[in-house]
Image (cartoon, rainbow, N blue to C red; front, side, top):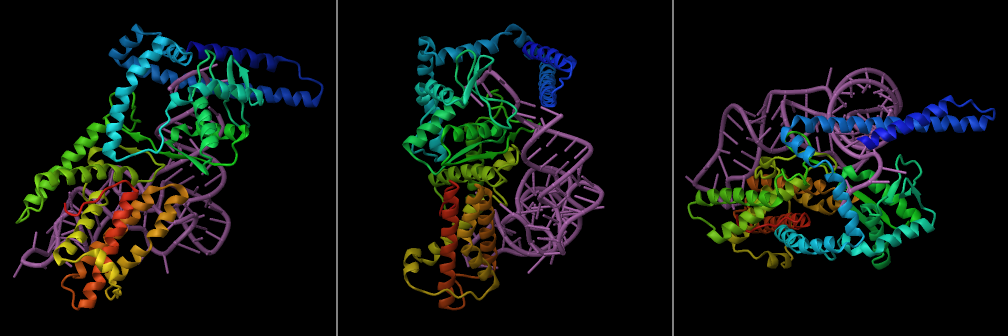
Length: 445
RNA sequence: GUCCCGGUGGCGCAAUUGGAUAGCGCGUCGGCCUCCGAAGCCGAAGGUUAGUGGUUCGAAUCCACUCCGGGAUACCA
């Protein structure tokens, strides 16, 4: 705040000087002065805006007794944190030792969650991998005349951007900007990619606009840079989840809750049958797939760019347009093959023809045919919700087919075979579509 | 101040990027299991797509302005 006040008074006196100065005789000079005044005014507005934002935050803090006491007791905590970061970057032995101590357990925790989510990587190169390249990045940018010193920091000034892209701070520490540039350089030199996608919250959009612009001027123009931005996850109060505040629900807890709820549904369903289908072990396995599928689906099924309010019930819903519905459709198809004693692989090789007599059959067949078209649409703008929409459409059409068209008890053998073929196509479409979303299916649930 | 993103039945969200009667889930109301799995299906109620003007054969979608909400806005990671 005090720094902002300082900047404010600096700007105010500069503006006053500019305005008080006698207007120059030369019209070109006059234009320049007018422009400077305009810029100074804009800067003033910005500073005032930032101060207003800060005041709101301070008010909030003041309203909370505990927070206020805590902040008063550790007034300098922010500066100390930054100093530690700078020390780490400068190779301080103690900081490095601490980092090396903390890292393994953190990674272990993260890897366990990735394993559970069935997420894997071809390469994982963390920030530290690029550490040695950072000063070289800044030197290179300076040499090329892209970066220059301003207020003690190394900055890249970009056309049409309100603020510079800072690649090294006053205190010598580097920033994400620097690491991101080093990453681009590394990838371009080692992997020569056609496209680099950044799947990051939309609030970082200015950062990526600046990063891409800088990278292009730096010489990496022959690649598609894409910020695949997504909306912010909001709490019940409509405010963003703060992943660092510690108050948010952890992902692990969410996964556990999902699996637990799924298990309850699976068990209740199976118990309601005359003859339960599943062993305890199978129930657990199904619950894991259904529960985690529900979370992934909820996340992928809405428009990528819009914010959404986090809700357990919505995340873990298993009725309607949900993963469970799709998994359920898949299981129903499997069940038909089971009960009919039909091997889908043999059926596919039999050379049997399909004949679509009923409207529900035609609608389903048509939906299945549109699979590749749906995938194309997803890729245009990296929008997984178009795939979930499509899969939901297929599953709905299958449900209508299922209600109206007996398969195993079809009128004729030819019709039975035809419908079995359609069932097989449906199951494969749902299975493949869900697998593209990282969601597993089960034969029985 | 400037820039970016939003505003769609009670709630949560879609709408194949300008196409036909704006769809779906939850919720509400009413039907459907001696018949391949009811986590399902069928039907009903609920909309001036924030507002005003414009472009177009056609607008939730594009343009302008207004109102409301969110985000970003030089040294956080």
